[in-house]
Length: 121
Image (cartoon, rainbow, N blue to C red; front, top):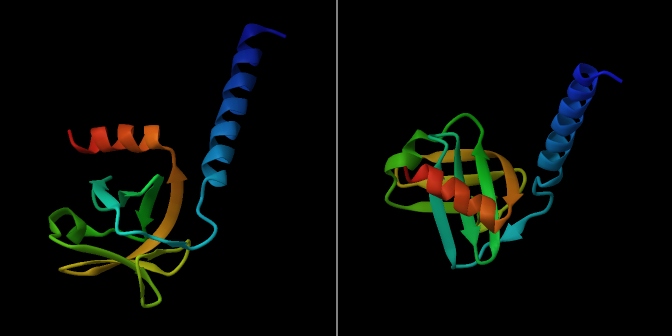
């Protein structure tokens, strides 16, 4: 097998592995959040980071959530239940508007810290 072909196969395998890993960390069940939360505005108006105790999430919005950047208060809820994060139906309410969550991914503490650091730049 020549080097070029091997490099292409390795690249494709790595891409498939990364895509599979990203799909496998999508939240599948609802989570009741505690009072011990940290919310980091990241990704502009498209996403935010959420730490709930020892659990870490990347929350992506359906469309965008432009009010997140200047919000003085943020509430998370699903179907009228406060502090409930679900794969579908979750809303993030700011003091200016309400945004629909499109995707929730679980991430580890290291990735949370890295994304948080990047968002604070």
